[in-house]
Image (cartoon, rainbow, N blue to C red; front, side):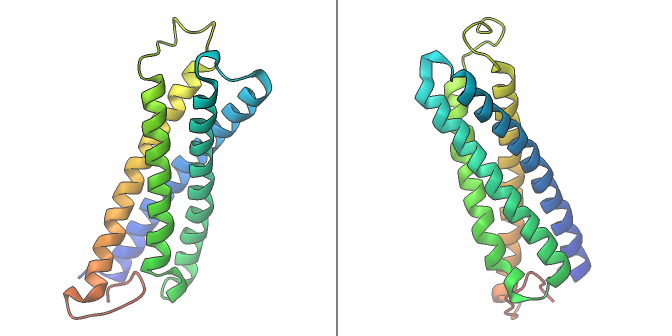
Amino acid sequence: MPSEKAIRLTHSILFGLVLLVSIIALIISATLVAHYNQQGYPSDHTGAYTARLRILLVASVWTTVFGIALTVGFQLLGTHVAFGILSHLVPITIAFILFMIGSASLTALVDKIDCGKAADSFSRCGVVKGLLVISWIDTIILLITLVFIITLAFVARGRYGVHKSTLYAE
């Protein structure tokens, strides 16, 4: 069974990575949405870019807010039920779904675009592709975090005869 120290260390590393990547995605998506709101979205798929960039903005805001809350809360009150398995599982699952939807839909939209050739009609093409990369990185880290939380949930649920509501298995 994993020890409290191992869980605390793994939690700190995973949520630190989630928080770092989400803040980067938040900055990039917020600047893109602000830029395109002022200058206009790319002309070929105006509504499509609007929805996709805003879903990634929502996903990064959601993940950043809950990442901060869960990281700080777990470090201060890790044994409290308020920072237990369910309070980690729900927001991280929602964040994963939001990032998956946003990343996959933006990938489908910009997959065939060459930023070198589309520089005149598509301002900030490279930044959009950068947002796409960081969004997929965040999606992968969130998936790893979900696997970690679900594994702890199975351990805590009684696989070893113990039922706990916090992330600590012992």
